[in-house]
Image 1 (spheres, one colour):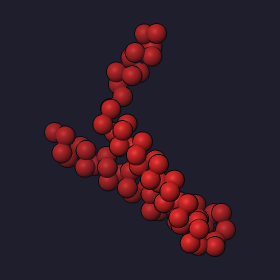
Image 2 (tube, rainbow, N blue to C red; image 1 turned 120 degrees about the horizontal axis):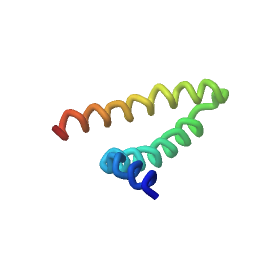
Image 3 (cartoon, rainbow, N blue to C red; image 1 turned 30 degrees about the vertical axis):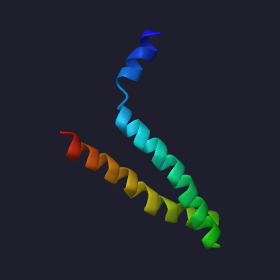
Length: 68
């Protein structure tokens, strides 16, 4: 029980919530990209990675900038 409490106390709640919403949005964005393009799996994966990953990085940078 102590271990669970220590893990939960270290979780950044703001990022946890934002990443949760981004996760759902990312699924819909990836689904949209897949429906629009007729590429093979690896090309779709690369395109989604190049679009979605910078969004997560931007959120972390903005949180550091505006939370201080």
